[in-house]
Length: 187
Image (cartoon, rainbow, N blue to C red; front, side, top):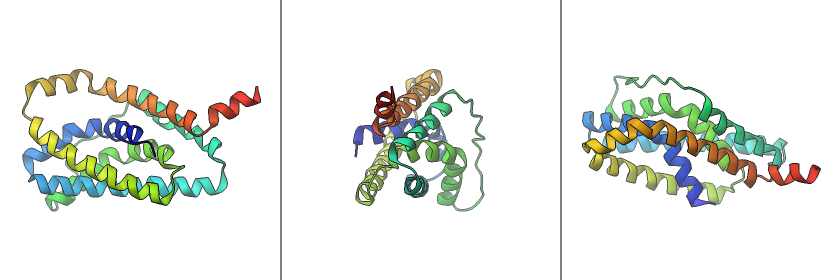
Protein backbone atom coordinates (compact mmCIF):
# COMPACT_ATOMS: atom_id res chain seq x y z
CA UNK A 1 0.00 0.00 0.00
CA UNK A 2 1.42 3.32 -1.10
CA UNK A 3 0.41 6.08 1.33
CA UNK A 4 1.81 8.81 -0.93
CA UNK A 5 -0.36 7.59 -3.80
CA UNK A 6 -3.40 7.42 -1.52
CA UNK A 7 -2.74 10.95 -0.26
CA UNK A 8 -2.27 12.42 -3.74
CA UNK A 9 -5.31 10.51 -5.01
CA UNK A 10 -7.47 11.71 -2.12
CA UNK A 11 -6.35 15.31 -2.48
CA UNK A 12 -6.71 15.44 -6.26
CA UNK A 13 -10.10 13.71 -6.33
CA UNK A 14 -11.46 15.99 -3.63
CA UNK A 15 -9.78 19.24 -4.68
CA UNK A 16 -12.90 20.60 -6.34
CA UNK A 17 -14.99 19.62 -3.30
CA UNK A 18 -12.70 21.63 -1.01
CA UNK A 19 -14.43 24.76 -2.34
CA UNK A 20 -17.78 23.24 -1.39
CA UNK A 21 -16.41 22.45 2.06
CA UNK A 22 -15.71 26.15 2.59
CA UNK A 23 -19.37 26.94 1.90
CA UNK A 24 -20.66 23.98 3.90
CA UNK A 25 -18.49 24.92 6.88
CA UNK A 26 -19.96 28.42 6.82
CA UNK A 27 -23.48 26.93 6.80
CA UNK A 28 -23.16 23.96 9.22
CA UNK A 29 -21.20 22.98 12.32
CA UNK A 30 -17.75 21.41 11.79
CA UNK A 31 -18.87 18.08 13.27
CA UNK A 32 -21.87 17.87 10.92
CA UNK A 33 -19.72 18.57 7.86
CA UNK A 34 -17.03 16.16 9.02
CA UNK A 35 -19.44 13.26 9.58
CA UNK A 36 -21.28 13.74 6.27
CA UNK A 37 -18.02 14.04 4.32
CA UNK A 38 -16.47 11.04 6.11
CA UNK A 39 -19.47 8.81 5.41
CA UNK A 40 -19.41 9.86 1.74
CA UNK A 41 -15.73 9.01 1.41
CA UNK A 42 -16.16 5.63 3.07
CA UNK A 43 -19.12 4.74 0.84
CA UNK A 44 -17.25 5.61 -2.36
CA UNK A 45 -14.02 3.87 -1.30
CA UNK A 46 -15.92 0.72 -0.38
CA UNK A 47 -17.78 0.73 -3.70
CA UNK A 48 -14.50 1.22 -5.60
CA UNK A 49 -12.81 -1.63 -3.75
CA UNK A 50 -15.60 -4.17 -4.26
CA UNK A 51 -16.18 -3.26 -7.91
CA UNK A 52 -12.44 -3.68 -8.46
CA UNK A 53 -12.45 -7.05 -6.70
CA UNK A 54 -15.36 -8.23 -8.86
CA UNK A 55 -13.43 -7.27 -12.00
CA UNK A 56 -10.27 -8.95 -10.68
CA UNK A 57 -12.09 -12.27 -10.44
CA UNK A 58 -12.37 -12.36 -14.22
CA UNK A 59 -9.31 -10.44 -15.41
CA UNK A 60 -5.58 -10.55 -14.60
CA UNK A 61 -4.14 -7.53 -12.77
CA UNK A 62 -2.08 -6.31 -15.71
CA UNK A 63 -5.23 -6.01 -17.85
CA UNK A 64 -6.92 -4.08 -15.04
CA UNK A 65 -4.07 -1.58 -15.45
CA UNK A 66 -6.04 -0.31 -18.45
CA UNK A 67 -8.33 1.27 -15.84
CA UNK A 68 -5.58 3.88 -15.46
CA UNK A 69 -7.15 5.49 -18.51
CA UNK A 70 -10.10 6.59 -16.33
CA UNK A 71 -8.21 9.23 -14.31
CA UNK A 72 -6.41 10.39 -17.45
CA UNK A 73 -9.75 10.71 -19.26
CA UNK A 74 -11.16 12.72 -16.36
CA UNK A 75 -8.16 15.06 -16.53
CA UNK A 76 -9.09 16.02 -20.09
CA UNK A 77 -12.87 15.73 -19.80
CA UNK A 78 -14.54 19.02 -18.97
CA UNK A 79 -16.89 18.25 -16.10
CA UNK A 80 -19.58 20.77 -15.27
CA UNK A 81 -20.70 19.61 -11.84
CA UNK A 82 -23.78 21.16 -10.33
CA UNK A 83 -22.42 22.23 -6.97
CA UNK A 84 -25.74 23.13 -5.39
CA UNK A 85 -27.06 21.74 -2.15
CA UNK A 86 -28.97 18.61 -3.19
CA UNK A 87 -31.24 18.14 -0.22
CA UNK A 88 -33.08 19.93 2.56
CA UNK A 89 -32.64 17.18 5.18
CA UNK A 90 -30.34 17.20 8.18
CA UNK A 91 -26.99 19.01 7.86
CA UNK A 92 -25.02 15.71 7.82
CA UNK A 93 -27.31 14.27 5.16
CA UNK A 94 -27.03 17.50 3.16
CA UNK A 95 -23.23 17.28 3.23
CA UNK A 96 -23.33 13.56 2.35
CA UNK A 97 -25.74 14.03 -0.57
CA UNK A 98 -23.83 17.05 -1.85
CA UNK A 99 -20.57 15.11 -1.72
CA UNK A 100 -22.00 12.02 -3.43
CA UNK A 101 -23.63 14.06 -6.18
CA UNK A 102 -20.53 16.16 -6.87
CA UNK A 103 -17.79 13.55 -6.43
CA UNK A 104 -19.17 10.03 -6.96
CA UNK A 105 -18.07 9.62 -10.58
CA UNK A 106 -14.56 10.94 -10.04
CA UNK A 107 -13.99 9.01 -6.83
CA UNK A 108 -15.19 5.71 -8.26
CA UNK A 109 -13.18 6.02 -11.46
CA UNK A 110 -10.00 7.24 -9.73
CA UNK A 111 -9.98 5.02 -6.65
CA UNK A 112 -11.13 1.84 -8.44
CA UNK A 113 -7.83 1.36 -10.32
CA UNK A 114 -5.82 2.41 -7.26
CA UNK A 115 -7.56 -0.09 -4.94
CA UNK A 116 -8.02 -3.00 -7.37
CA UNK A 117 -4.87 -4.85 -6.26
CA UNK A 118 -5.23 -4.31 -2.51
CA UNK A 119 -5.97 -7.06 0.01
CA UNK A 120 -8.84 -6.73 2.46
CA UNK A 121 -6.40 -5.86 5.27
CA UNK A 122 -4.77 -3.13 3.17
CA UNK A 123 -8.20 -1.87 2.16
CA UNK A 124 -9.25 -1.57 5.81
CA UNK A 125 -6.00 0.29 6.52
CA UNK A 126 -6.82 2.52 3.54
CA UNK A 127 -10.25 3.28 5.00
CA UNK A 128 -8.65 4.35 8.28
CA UNK A 129 -5.98 6.39 6.49
CA UNK A 130 -8.49 8.18 4.22
CA UNK A 131 -10.78 8.67 7.22
CA UNK A 132 -7.99 10.45 9.09
CA UNK A 133 -7.19 12.53 5.97
CA UNK A 134 -10.86 13.46 5.67
CA UNK A 135 -10.99 14.71 9.25
CA UNK A 136 -7.71 16.62 8.85
CA UNK A 137 -8.88 18.23 5.61
CA UNK A 138 -12.08 19.50 7.21
CA UNK A 139 -10.12 20.98 10.13
CA UNK A 140 -7.51 22.58 7.86
CA UNK A 141 -10.12 24.01 5.51
CA UNK A 142 -11.98 25.42 8.50
CA UNK A 143 -8.76 27.20 9.53
CA UNK A 144 -7.89 28.58 6.09
CA UNK A 145 -11.38 29.24 4.72
CA UNK A 146 -11.09 32.96 5.36
CA UNK A 147 -7.56 33.46 3.97
CA UNK A 148 -7.91 35.49 0.73
CA UNK A 149 -4.62 34.22 -0.76
CA UNK A 150 -5.82 30.61 -0.55
CA UNK A 151 -9.01 31.45 -2.41
CA UNK A 152 -7.06 33.24 -5.16
CA UNK A 153 -4.60 30.35 -5.69
CA UNK A 154 -7.35 27.72 -5.74
CA UNK A 155 -9.41 29.77 -8.15
CA UNK A 156 -6.45 30.44 -10.45
CA UNK A 157 -4.70 27.06 -10.40
CA UNK A 158 -6.88 24.49 -8.60
CA UNK A 159 -8.34 22.85 -11.71
CA UNK A 160 -4.94 22.60 -13.46
CA UNK A 161 -3.34 21.03 -10.39
CA UNK A 162 -6.19 18.53 -10.13
CA UNK A 163 -5.77 17.53 -13.80
CA UNK A 164 -2.02 17.02 -13.43
CA UNK A 165 -2.65 14.79 -10.40
CA UNK A 166 -5.24 12.75 -12.35
CA UNK A 167 -2.77 12.13 -15.21
CA UNK A 168 -0.01 11.12 -12.79
CA UNK A 169 -2.36 8.73 -10.97
CA UNK A 170 -3.39 7.14 -14.29
CA UNK A 171 0.24 6.67 -15.32
CA UNK A 172 1.04 5.18 -11.92
CA UNK A 173 -1.81 2.67 -12.33
CA UNK A 174 -0.42 1.67 -15.75
CA UNK A 175 2.99 1.08 -14.18
CA UNK A 176 1.95 -0.48 -10.86
CA UNK A 177 -0.45 -3.01 -12.44
CA UNK A 178 2.30 -4.44 -14.62
CA UNK A 179 0.57 -3.28 -17.82
CA UNK A 180 3.61 -1.38 -19.09
CA UNK A 181 6.07 -4.22 -18.37
CA UNK A 182 3.65 -6.70 -19.99
CA UNK A 183 3.39 -4.55 -23.12
CA UNK A 184 7.17 -4.05 -23.24
CA UNK A 185 7.66 -7.81 -23.01
CA UNK A 186 5.43 -8.27 -26.08
CA UNK A 187 7.79 -6.18 -28.18
